[in-house]
Length: 275
Picture 1 (cartoon, rainbow, N blue to C red):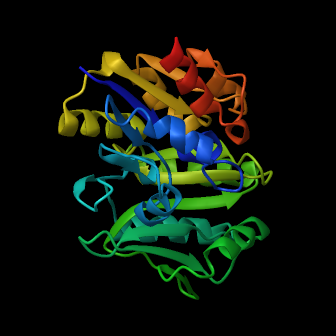
Picture 2 (picture 1 turned 30 degrees about the vertical axis):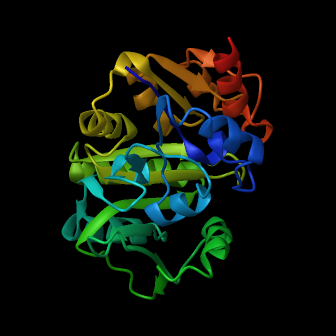
Picture 3 (picture 1 turned 90 degrees about the horizontal axis):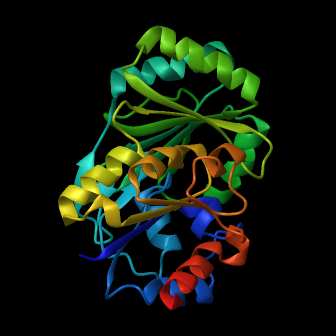
C-alpha cells in the first residue's frame, strides 16, 4: 500500500511570501506516482488551488481547518457547517466587545465561496484585508450577517481579548462548537477560529482515508501550528518544521532542522527518498 503525505500550507509548505519554490515542487511531485499526496489547511479552496499551481495533489484536500473536504477538481467530499442562526449570535457576541469577525461561507455547490467582513476593522484585520482587495469573493458589510452555510468564523486580535471572547462563546454554545485560539506567527497577534464541533484536521484525515482507502500507519503529516495537533495524533509520523510553535514541536515525532522558508518539507522528503 502507498505511503501518504499530508502537509499544512502556511508556515509549513508555503514560504512566508506564500510561494512554493521550484525545488519543493520538484521533490514533492517526484512522489506522485508512488504515494498519496494532499494538504490540510485553514485556507479556502480558491486560495489553496492558487497556491498549489504546479503542485501534484492526488487525494481530497482538507480545507478551512477541516470544515470542507474537496478534490482539486472541485468535487465536494464532506462539509461541516455553522448555521446562520449560530453564526449571527457569534457575530453579535463579538460586537459587544467591539470586534467583528471574518466569516467564510459556501455560496453554492460549485465551491464558490464568500469571505464576508465588517467595515469596522482593527489594525490586524486591516492588514489582512489588503491581501484580498482583488478577490471577487471578499465583501465588506456595515451590518455584518452570516450566510446559510458557514465554514468558519475567525476573529483576529490581541490574545487577552480573544480569551474573554472564547469564554463568552463557550458560555452560550457549550461544546456545540469548536474553538481554536492560536498565535499568528508573523503579525504579533492571535486568531480565534470558531468551527463546527467536528470540523478539524483529524476528522478531515478520517474523511480522506475513507474516500481514498489508506492506512493511517503509512501516514506522515507536516505542520507548524496548534490546529495541526489533531492530525499529529493520528499519523504514524508527525513532522514539525523548524519554525513551528514550541508546543507543536513537543508533540511531533520529528522536528526538522529547516524552516518553511528553507524548504523544510521538501528536504525531509528528499532525505527519506534517498535513505
